[in-house]
Amino acid sequence: NTLIENPRIFKEHNIMQNMAIIAWSCAKTGHESPELFDLISRKVVPKMPRFHAQNMSNIVWAYAKVNHPAPELFKAVARTAIEKIDTFSPQGMANMVWAYATAKQPAPELFDAVAIK
Image (cartoon, rainbow, N blue to C red; front, side):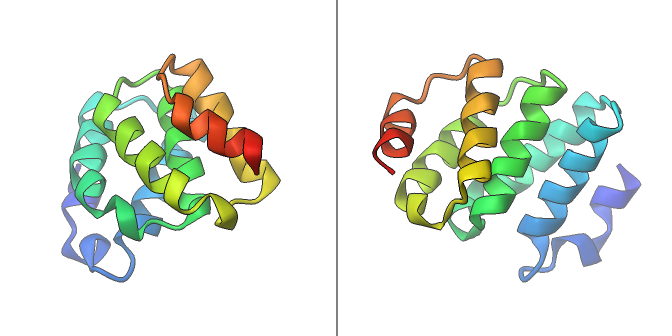
């Protein structure tokens, strides 16, 4: 958690990307740290409207990959992703839909928005 507590990580201009990268990297390497994933979720949920599409798809992918429950994170991503659906690449949408299905997080409005896109 020392890395996460570093104030440089939480500068307003880079928090979203840094948190998504940290979560993605942990998941990609198989590093499961419930405390770290809980902390990331608490930090990013209030800032979700400022996330870019790739960061949203990466962060939910990471949580699904390590099977870490974070219903508030998934809800926040779904709300924001629906508003920004036109900014997602096909790969980003596919990764996001996979994450919701894998994590068994219901998001029918998000799935509808992806289907229409």
